[in-house]
Length: 137
Image (tube, rainbow, N blue to C red; front, top):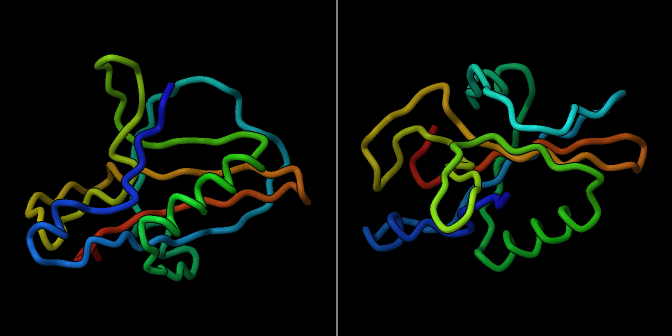
């Protein structure tokens, strides 16, 4: 299964807006790993996560984002993915980002955000990565 992650917003860039992705990371401690598998998720809403913790979003270039994701994936024990499943030439997950309206997209989808969580053996920590485009709250 593939995780299709945007490292640049072509729609925002082509419309004259900032194409970089803003990334926020929420660090936590884990006791037990989630069971591997594919599960239906009732809802994932960045605003609910942001109301419980202080998330600082940082703009990253496409190269910085790709480098960061590769480093985290290489050192992770497990990766958890939220998004929409697709099946074309292969099966994967996409829409791994905020689904709120952005500078280039007017459609506002609430409660169906996507994210990545990396689980690390180092002190049993995890990092939940949230991704936003230009203009998303």
